[in-house]
Image (cartoon, rainbow, N blue to C red; front, side, top):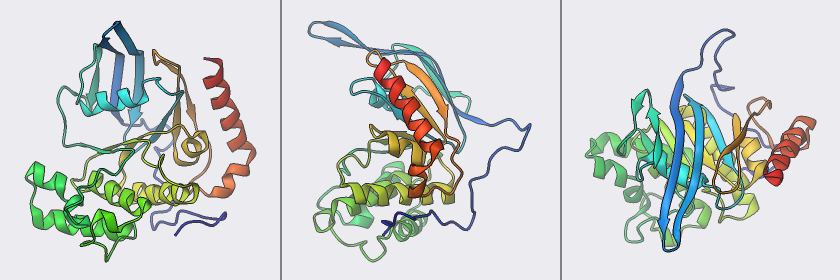
Length: 276
């Protein structure tokens, strides 16, 4: 378990690869002039307004902002489960107008099927997509080992702690090998220590498997500690107030929370959210 204040993410690859000086970063997701308006009994409500954002390939980006600012709506639009009222989203340069197998998602609750064991829960996306199940099982077992659930393949969700269930949910989101992983407050229901543990587990997976991660959270410290960039959003209708580059080196440690750089990032993001 990862609970020490001197905790480090240890990977064989070391720090994540960055574009060399002068090299152009590859854009994975492009969001142009995005609006989302919902019809209600009393009229129409605009959840998102004029959102423009480029997300780079293999980048870890966090969305923060007050409740109801449209963070989860933006994630749903990237899944193409709902359609924008205006604007468009490109995935790898292609218009995203229907759900893509390139996108995986992890919800706030694990949403595991209680009658299926851990391995079978993780394999569900592979079954739905009709993937080769021999390869999918090998990948699922590798992921379960990576998050510390090796040996729990046949356990049912009711036999696991909340943190273990969420580990299984992360594996399920990755089993079909998507290039993009969307995470909607995945650790919000967990206690503080388990939340820290899973945050660093997630970084370990990210550094090994190199995904583009879009992570929604209300926790500013969590956003800073995990991310390459933090997107600060305004109250509804949600707009992007500012995108903050996080200057902390990788691998990240909990001790970084006491650094001047961390405090400066935290103060800036809190000020942005409070003034809107």
